[in-house]
Image: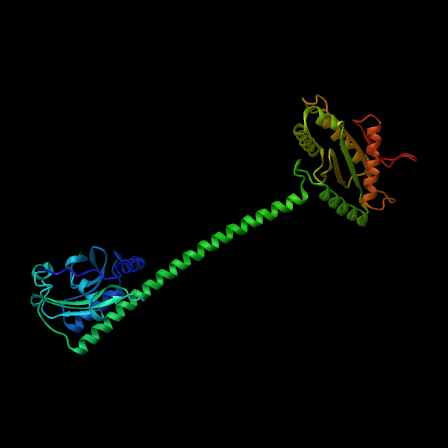
Length: 368
């Protein structure tokens, strides 16, 4: 009765190694076909094979002289080779070997009478398959021929190792590409966050206008430029009239919405070169580069009317007061210019609100 070869002790690891090789069911390759053709010529046999053994079959990576791509595993002579001592097996006449005398591949097609095989091992010593010779008549191999068969098998094994290395390199390349893509996404996210943080440093979170730090920095830059080139420069300080009453009557969330809308209305009334920042509470600073006193006052009036004419439901009427100051030969610093605008704003509020005042305070008048 035909004897089925037992499974290798390390069958699970062996099969995993074979799967990792990614060679099963791949097209023929010249490197393997050249070795089997050379073996057939060198040993004068009709068939030479590179056979790989998976769970249920032996599959031929190269099959010189045989028009099959695979057979069942249970009838494959190569399954005995991968568990044979020293990984090689020679059967001079299969009909005289009890293991194979009634094997379908012996008594039927293709009619194997001679078999010689050497196991193909992965780098860890796991047998993946065989390099084998088949003849349809009995024969033998001498020591020199067996050595030659081992040498050819070593070349086939080297091709499998090379293929495994290529697979590993491809996997490493994919991993490196994925790591690069991950790092690039992280870099972009970090850059976006840095830009957000940079924006947050200069932007008032509530209104989207510049914040006080950004406003003072912009004023300092424009003041230095205006002083060096002797250019006009004005500022406008704006205060929302009776804003405390808005918060008290309608709540702070609604008060926040009012401030956001006021900031938008101010921006709509400005020139392209102007800059607005929330200076604190309900107060806004507008920097007006190149603006002479008359131009600055006109811009401030435009802002005032734009806010006053807007449709307001709560409160039904909302106004602003504004103080304008322009740089002159006696203006010593950006802070000095702001002080002048603050005094003008105080006069606007003291004068009844919903108005614009310009210039430094008259003698004896002090801002609050």
